[in-house]
Image (cartoon, rainbow over all chains, first blue to last red; front, top):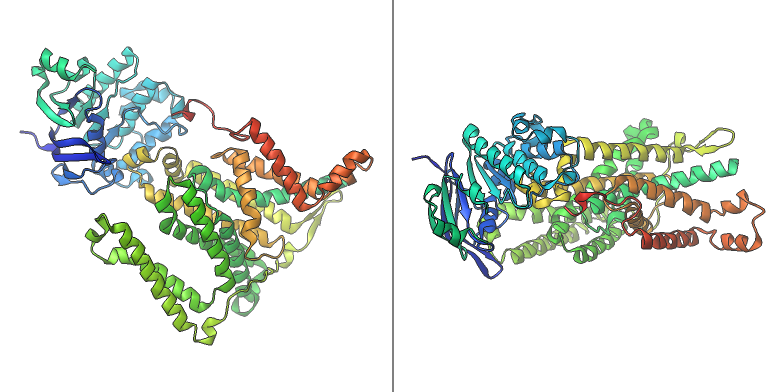
Length: 237
Length: 385
């Protein structure tokens, strides 16, 4: 069995007094693509934000490669190997595409001070970025920004990539480009992916799924076994 | 014609001081969004640092280097004001990010403290203050970390600072008994900084007579501006600062240590205020209330220029400087002697420094009604991003 890259144990997260995540247990193994499914508002984005450290759990553990990272701030977790592509992309709008990509190198040892080389593999994955290197990030289309956000996260050579609805609000042709790129990233780099997604086609490319309801994990298994009943119950908005 | 050149040159020099003063605020307020009412007092610290450096070069082993003391005072003032700003960020502002009203009040309080500080500081006072600050910063590091992760940690933090302050006051009081240590460094009166000989003359170009002190201020402003632009656009920390100021949480998730970036940004902004303080000493005597004369002008410059836009800061500062000088000096009357009597009355009415300021600010307020985002507003899709 592959080594676990991410382990969540009995995770409980609150917004003020609202209990959002309830005793969540979840594992992502090395080289595995895991998809979180569930209707809007069940806590999928909250879970990813807790893994990267934007939200703190009230109880439970977040382990990266069997090391406890709960006490680390987001930048500490990024430097330990968690790449994060948030919902809505969150490109730095006034920085150029090149500068946005350079920020991805901050997660490497020594950060941007020691690393200034943008690995050309991101341009193979997303050729449009090379064309627009000197354009401001905020001036790109939604699909281009999504590609930039994924490329930026990849440049930090993460062990675990968190993708929060990467196809949301993107035109269908670009959705396919992003799906292909994510699949290729996993095959060529062996990194693990924890994906939140609503597109069934993309969900089926994952190895494993966790279905969430009311802040807790209520079902899990190989996506190959994802039945129509489960899809109807958890994937429809 | 000569008079026109003269007026423009003097307006440019005054505008340059404003550029220098507002540059630091453009970094702190424009980029970080922090309303620092103590920015003027950080300028004042720079001016007093120049006074101290001048005194060190006046007598003793450094006397031969007196002509260049001002060049030494620039980096020293940057460091002194920068460190004061850093301390302010670490002890006060860091706890108030995202709470502009509290920040405004707290930094206004700090500005009053700094004014009183230069009036009453003595060696005993300084030793007590340094001891209190060092203790306050060290206590969290020298005590078990679990104490600082509890729900009551904020109370502990306040308590440790009160305790450190009490120790500092106690030590200062004890040392105050020693007469040498009890002598005030400055006084409530204004201080005069003597410019070196080469800054006391002027360059005569026939049509234009340019005092070298004012030329020096213009050159210093140009160099400081170029350095800030290089730092923000080309250096690694500049990219980090721009990223954090636009999207703090995402920058954090990318691996950027945001708290270090905040501290560095504040240090640079405050250091620039110190450099502006050096320039102000060349224009006349300075006192503890120096900051109050500049703070409103500086905010006006940043708002008029467009928050977050350095080019706007420069254009707005030079515009305000030139306009204030032209109106305030009454030069219009000399340039246009045949002015209609009614207009002549109006120009004469505004031909004082304070009335010129009133007119310029009124014009700015009117301008902002039509362009609330200033001269150089943010443009493009990223405004909403």
